[in-house]
Length: 260
Image (cartoon, rainbow, N blue to C red):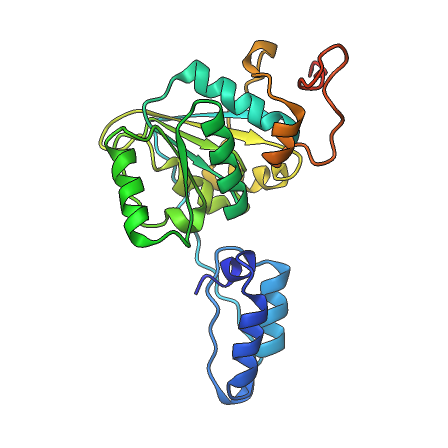
């Protein structure tokens, strides 16, 4: 199960070792279940399965009606400054932020906490006792911001989430539906904000095809971007190859070109 996730989580060597110890593919029955048929899943199936047959199940193309969806096109290095600006402007009561990797979640939680936004990252390897305490604090409003990956958030049912922020656009379109469905529950309204950077924007078309409409795009005003130091952006994983700041703004965010 979750064959595609196994690759994302780095279990490829373990999978190959386990399959290599089993009976040969023509003497066993093998089934792979996955949400996204990636090239790596295809490689594994042809390597360890005998004439595999692909069976597709059409997903339910539904998103919550009471969720206000917004999309910002930003450069990767702009994501942290814009996220801080969004949190300042929206002043949400309870925010769930989604990222695509455990490492990114941990770094982002650390950066937000440094900026006065008490934040924790919930990942798949957190001990159950600590996980439950973290979720309890979030539900009771003692922890206003929670960062999560799709794997770690499965099975979470938290009422009162006012905002879902896709810091990273999901690579699987169905994950977008699952993510934004965390808000606007029990008749309440909610907001889902997505940041589309050059690394993950390639998944946007598939997301919009799944939900059946374009996500409304907004352009962030200059004042929405909170100034952060260059070193802080790098530690947050947002500026690995970017230059230092913009002209006349030491340590600041590079000047942005106006989009038409």
